[in-house]
Length: 343
Image (tube, rainbow, N blue to C red; front, side, top):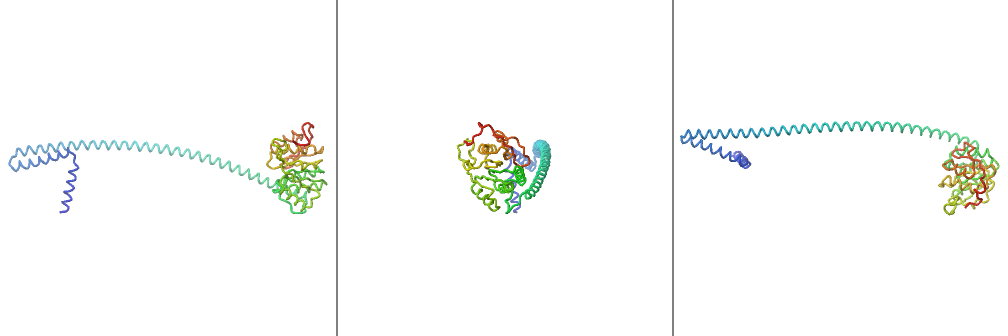
């Protein structure tokens, strides 16, 4: 019973979903069926046949209408399938093109990366070769330095001295060759202790100038520990507050150096932070009149050092092998270009 009720409800729901045209067709068919049944029951065979023929005609018209609608649906489905096929082919072509583009881009990136890695490997090998050569040179220079100097106390490391063993070796060799009576270092740091040993062996005197008070005290203590106080004098000369634009602005306070004269060797390695050309120019401006006739000026071999020293009377380098420094024979310029007291 429940099944029949559910079936009836389902059919009623279907009837509600029919369009008006479908409803009229269904009513017509029902009427014709009832007419055929009534005519047959009344013995009206001709009427029943006529109504039956009308019913068959209506059924044929319905089948034709259904066939036409099914044909339209089939055509629409075929068109949809054709559009879908075109869309799939276009998507496939785009995917293939994108994949080819990515493949080419990946190959290019791989080639560039391989070339970069090869270049970096060559650079790393070159840097390693240079470092090994530099370390080997520093080790050999350190052995030679300790053959030239017999320290009486622990020596400061060359890194703390602000220059390598090769630089120290060049300076020590220059002191041994020139045997200066008076040598002056500007901002040499603890390298002054090494040079003091060489100056002591030459029978001379060393004046080490530092602008930092702590650095000066440290070098003075090192000199005392090595028994070099009779040879090495450490002078604390603060940086000058001369007016900007003057020759010695930012250089050492020159009034602390007025007693230093007859200098045979001048090592210009400071003050730190000052352009090489300016500090060389200031050093020669102050010490130029106090250099002996055969004095040697040692400058940091940086940009502008040679130009500044040449402009103020120093000749071209003639003492090779002084590490990162350049040793120049000093030739006094005309008096018009050099003042004894800097501005």
